[in-house]
Length: 196
Image 1 (cartoon, rainbow, N blue to C red):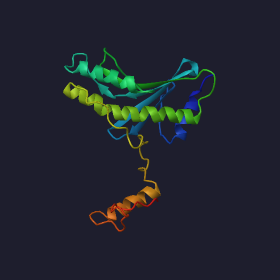
Image 2 (tube, rainbow, N blue to C red; image 1 turned 120 degrees about the horizontal axis):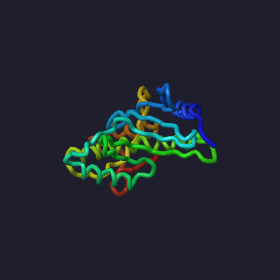
Image 3 (cartoon, rainbow, N blue to C red; image 1 turned 60 degrees about the horizontal axis):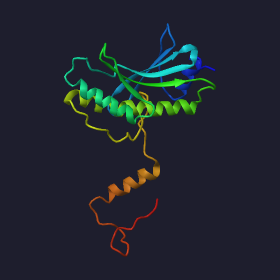
Image 4 (tube, rainbow, N blue to C red; image 1 turned 135 degrees about the horizontal axis):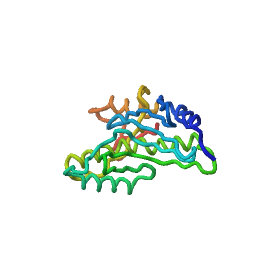
């Protein structure tokens, strides 16, 4: 079983992304906005449709003679050890650092839910790893992992996510009472908590 280029495009389109296709090969290219930057992503379809790969384009570059290369490679190794889907690689010939995630289609079709999970692992991973790798390149030491993003990167032009109504209401109530004593107190003197 394999996936066609048209099916791959349809999966991405259903996730709300606008994209470009290469005229001479089965390659899709799109851009995402994250917390720490904007990323160009390509999806390559290979091996008669049984293999596809998400890959960053222009993510970072660290030449082989860079003074902090050792720290960068150690950081890439540490990130790769903890990531499930995303892997970061370094090309010694060009100095390119790229993020990639592989998909094999062997005995069934790729479902929308499966594709969504791949994107949901790949895109936040490249976004959260970017400042860590960049810092290692600039300072010569790995700053360690960062907390996960609250929201995965979104396609450009997508409306900013909003809080659920009950959380928004709670936040508004807290803002109104900031600096004021609580309205009600429980018998122990602590503010009474009301479930919303």
